[in-house]
Image (cartoon, rainbow, N blue to C red; front, top):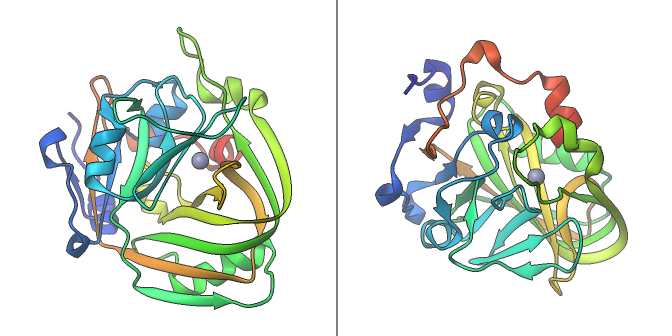
Length: 260
Ligand SMILES: [Zn+2]
C-alpha cells in the first residue's frame, strides 16, 4: 500500500482503517470514506462496504452504489438511491458501495438563507463560513430550492469503462420550487488524491421522489448547517491503492465528470 501524502494528512488527518474501525461518534467530527475519487474515475465501480456498515457509522452522506448505479443520498440515517432511470428508492442494508463519504452530522454553525441565492452565491456563502483553506466540512441545506439541475449516472456492465467515457450517458433533470435537503461536503485541494476538491452536493426532495447529484441549484429560503470535520477514516477496497499524486485526474476532467 502506498504511503499517505503528508499534505493530505495535514489537511484531512487521514487514517486508513478496515471494516471493524468504520464507526464514528459525534464527538469525532470525522468522515468515513470508502475508496477514492481517482479509483472511481478509473472505473473501479465495485466496493466491499455495505450500506448497512455505512449507516452504522454515519447518518449523513453521499456516494454511489456498486456498478456505479445512480446517486446515493444518506440523510437522517436513511439511504436513498436516485437511479438514472426509474423512481428514487430506499437502499437495502446489504447493498454495497464503491465510493461513499459519510459523517455523523453535528451542526457547528447555522446560517439562515432568507432570499434565494443562485448557485455561485450559495457556494460563496458556504466558503465564507468555511474557508477553502480549512480542512473539510459537511454541509446540509434544508428549505426551498427555486431551481435544481440534477444528474444521475447509469448502472454499468463489466468490463467497466472509465468514468470519462460514460459522462455523456448521465441522465439530467431540471426542477423548480422543490422543498428538500442538500447533503454535501467540501474538501480542500490537498485532498485531490482522495476526494473531489471543492463542494460535492447531492439533493433529495422532502417527499423522497426526486434526488440526484447537484450540477446547479438556487436555494432559499433555507437553513444552512455546517459541520467542521477534523479527520477522515479511509477504507480502501481490494485493488484500490492510494493514488500516486503524479497520476491524479486533472481538475478539468473532474469538472467535466463530477462538476457543477
Ligand atoms: Zn455526486
